[in-house]
Length: 126
View (cartoon, rainbow, N blue to C red):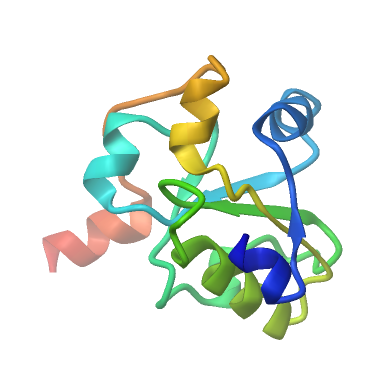
């Protein structure tokens, strides 16, 4: 809904699932950490919709990026997708149905905390 008003491409949960199965997209969940831990698209990264940087995304600006949040009324995913486009990414989508639409389509999810990256561990240790 909002993505079209922002000139972004939309993708359905089923079409995204096919891209995920073929390894053709980087999927980015911009929901809260608690929401991401409860359920997310398999292999999805979790990023803050307002504070991610280009270094958090693939180096290839032509790679497919798919952003999603909670549901079709959420504006975080379209805003994050617009930021990625402003960073020079050319193949950016929004799954406007969000994780609720993904689950309604009975598609698989993952849950649980993500493993800490080495840089996060170093930052935590101080």
